[in-house]
Amino acid sequence: MSNDAQTVDTSNQEQSEVTNTEATNVEETTATADEIAALKAKLAEAEAQASEFKDQWLRAAADYKNFKRRTEIERSELIRSASADLVLKLLPVVDDFDRAVANIPPEIAESSWWGGTQLIAHKLRLILESQGVKVIDAVGTDFDPNIHEAVLYEDAPGQDGKVVEELQKGYRIHDRVLRPSMVKVGRD
Image 1 (tube, helix red, strand yellow):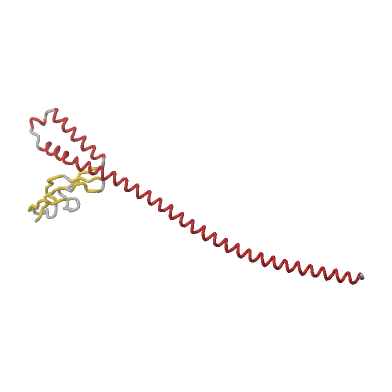
Image 2 (tube, helix red, strand yellow; image 1 turned 45 degrees about the vertical axis):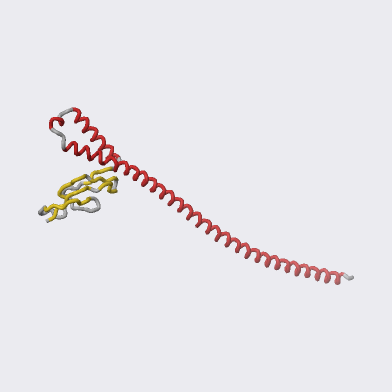
């Protein structure tokens, strides 16, 4: 083979190699583009799944927070209702002390024994107040069926719909009516 033939042969061989390299590069580019598209799809899928997991986590965290708040409210309500039951059982004792004070004979009123008995009644009232128990004011106020229980009506000019007399004290515990006041209501 002559030099010219070798040069043409080498030149053809180089061109063939360049063409093969270009074809390989095109295939690699095509393969790389396909891989990139697949990776982008996987990335989009992973981001969607991460977003879904985040939403589920946020919902679970909110549910847990609501559960904690609800159980705390239920617990405090349970404690309140338990103390309300006890207070409700003590109210007749307070009523008895009030009746005793109202009906004490003058000769006993001056004794130290009676002073001690009044201190006991005062301590009982202080304990009830410390638990949030308050007396419902009734006389002179408008009749309210939510806090008053009308047991009698009395003719009282100018006192229509007003409480004219309290027959039994009513009590609240915090904002809840523990026992309504038994009252006499005026009418024209």
